[in-house]
Length: 369
Image (cartoon, rainbow, N blue to C red; front, side, top):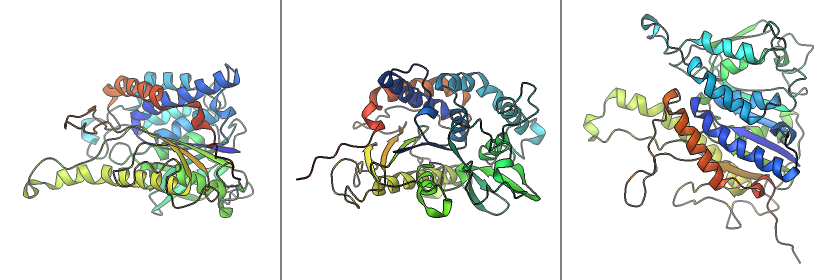
C-alpha cells in the first residue's frame, strides 16, 4: 500500500497542521515501538501548498515534527518582516527575509552555499510542491519523481536541478504579502506566486492524480486498499461579507471577501471530490445536505470501485453553536503571528480529540459470503 500526506496552505496557521502531524507521528511511534520514527518512514509522497510545502519539504528531509514546530515558533516572526512604508504599496513584507530562511535551512553545506536541489538524494520520499506560474497563467505541480515528464536530467530545464528553496519561495509568494519569485528553468524564466492561488490550496486530489494518472508516470496502483491519503488543513473560517445591507457593501468589502472565499471554495471542492472518489474514513460534515460522505452509506462508487482510502483533518474556527454564539473566534489572516500560540493550542486539542490510529489504515470491510 502507498501512503500520501497532503498539507494545505495557510501561512502561520501551519502551526495548527503540525499539531495533527505530531499526533500521527506519536501514534505510529507507539504502535511500531520505534521512538525515532519520522513520517518519511511511513508516507511515500508528501504534497504541500504554501506553508504546507514548507512542512512537506522538511518532512521529506526526515525532520521530526517537533523540530519543524520549533522552527515555526522561533522563525515565524522573522519571516514576516514589513517592508519600509514607502514600499508597502507594492507588498506588505520583505521577500528577502523568507528567502534567507529557506536558503539557510535547505542547504547541503554548513556555509549555505550549496542548495538542496529538487532532485537531491537527501529527499527521502516523493515530494510535490504546488505553485502558480504567473507568467504562463497556469498551476504548476512540481515533483522530484525522476520519471516525471519535466525531470529528464538531459534537459537544461530539468525541474530536478532547481534549488528547493526557490520552489518554496515561489509556493509561498502570497499576492500582496510578498513579491512574486522568479525561478529559472534552463533558459526559461518565470514569475511564480503562491500555490493557494490555484485550485490546489488543498493538494490532496492533485497528489492522488499525480500518483495514479499514467501521464504523470508514477504508476502507483489505485484502490481502497492500495492507496491511503491523509489530508491536513490549517484551520479555516466561513468567509462572509460584513453584516450590512446590500447597498452599503463597498468595493473594499468585496475585495477582502473574494479571494479568501474563492480559496476556501476550491479547497472544499477538492475535499468533496476526494470523499466522492475515495473511501472517507473520517472528516467533518461538509454541509447539512451531504453530511460527511463517510462510512458505509450511499455513495457515488461502491466499496470495490473506490479509488483510495481518505481522511480529512481540519477545523472551522467561527462555526456558530446551536444558540448562535461562536464556538471559537480567531483572526485567520495568514500573517497573524500573535495568534500562533492559539493555533497551536487549538491544533493540539483537535488532534487529541480526533486523530486515531485506525485512520492510518484502510477500513476493514465486512467479509462477503
